[in-house]
Length: 337
Image (cartoon, rainbow, N blue to C red):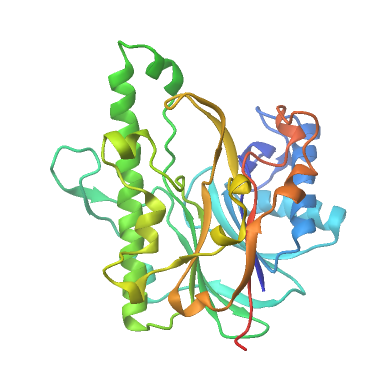
């Protein structure tokens, strides 16, 4: 079974109307929106996912259906859809390809999963006082039944963004740089809080069943290495938190594709990093991590550079000339030998 994850850049801007949608918005006219959507649809068709998980999906199911109708018309693929419970204009989605190797999917409804909807105490603003915090976007947790092999649980995650509004201008001005640092630290503390809460959830699943087959994927808004804030302001690396502690080796998750991709290709997005002063910096923001009970069933994985780049026209700067600002990632899960 092939699982593909993709942050498709601001799908909500392709549509207007929510429950009665039409193509086009104040950001993109109808023709440009359909062009961008067509590029994304062709990337998905090239990858042929059995299960597709998305971040930055549209705010209404009817809008997603408009995109799926376009994909069916252009590629012949059709999908069953589950939508995240919150997220506003950037919702989480899980899509099961009809006729693929994923026979069914449904929302997880166990007690531990339901508890993710509840707030928890955390000091996200650094004032040393614990206040109730909850997920910016509640993880979408689904139970999946492959055509071959045992069921598995898939957790779709999109952590709080690190983005600071007008951040570059604020950072480059010595008079306002400290305000940028404060805003950036607040975002990173919120991301850390979400990572620790989800890791607690994963620990609970594995302590109940050490062989649990669990896969976490999505846009973690963080990646390998130590950025400026982790080095100098002692914030956390989110992926390290989710993978688990070396003091509890039986609970450690493994990365799904890191060792299968050559180092120069280990990126899913490219953005200018004005803090470290690196233009067009390659960043690995999107990940798949798998539980100990699932590691031996991961047959392959990677980053879909080829399918993505085939749909970029020119420099890809106009939104309709690129499928997204993130590249898709994928893993293939096999049945036990």
